[in-house]
Length: 114
Image 1 (cartoon, rainbow, N blue to C red):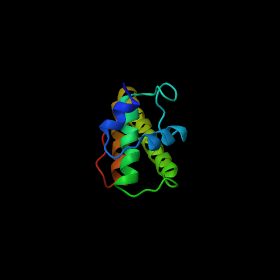
Image 2 (image 1 turned 30 degrees about the vertical axis):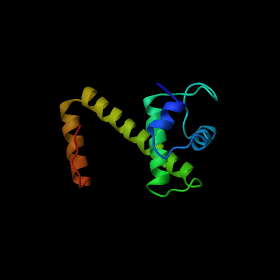
Image 3 (image 1 turned 60 degrees about the vertical axis):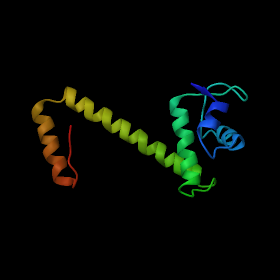
């Protein structure tokens, strides 16, 4: 965990007022309260992502909530798909897994693995 001052010095181009606004908007959810925030690694990654979207990709602050929401949904779906794949791999009999793979391979241009 790192505090807000360390985070600001680690990420060039990051201003305290921007970070505090992102926390107020709940785009970043560190532990603690104003003046004593502590950022986990995932919080730091989120701040880095927001800064990159804004500074490198030109996403304005009005669009950031939409972009962040879509990215959150994408990451959640990927996590859920991994969980489903793991469950199928552990629970389903070999014949069911083989049939499922054959079915998916016919419908997808990308390699499938379970």
